[in-house]
Amino acid sequence: MDLSKKQVTKLVEGCIGNERTAQETLYRHFYAQMLRICYRYLKTKDLAQEAVNEGFLKIFQHIKTYDAQKGDLGAWVCTIIIRTAIDYNRKELKFFTEDYNDQDTDEYFIDPDILSKLYAADLLKTIQQLPDATRVIFNLSVIDGYSHKEISTQLNITEGTSRWHLADGKKKLRAWLASPDNSLQPTDNTAI
Image 1: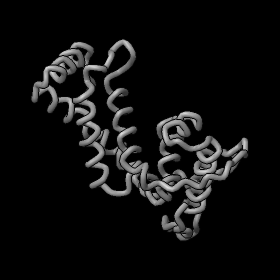
Image 2: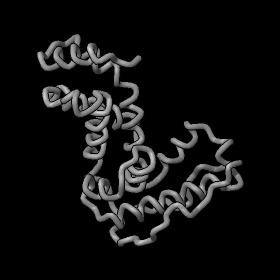
Image 3: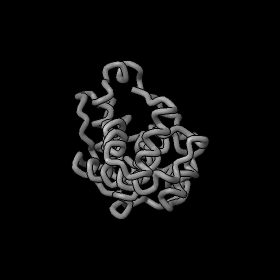
């Protein structure tokens, strides 16, 4: 259910006026999608739910800054939720800080036969098994389309560190997905 421009205007004005029905409508409209996004960044569903709720609190506190001329309400909400999820676990993330200068991180190939057997839920489950820092960078880059420069700014790391985590995540996912027993369990659980 997409919101029309008129509905968005009315909803935003209601939230600015602290109207509970408008806030509830906004929350219910975006909740499921935002929970799925947070779950990509956080280890447990409980943490994801906490991040969503904290994100919506920020949304309601700052709704007056939303400008429909600059973009879609959904994109604005999504940006706040992603940043909240990242902030939520930033203190716990440990980044490998050696620069990575390989220019072609996409040189590896996953056999299409493997991909055709996967469902989105399986892939999401596999991504969840990546080490925390690698999972966050993989999601920001591959799923949400952020550049290494944007990731490095958001996470206060170097672009090389971002590239290394992305390459490492792709390498681990490739190995797990190509394993003959179709086991999605990581072989290396060391913290990065």
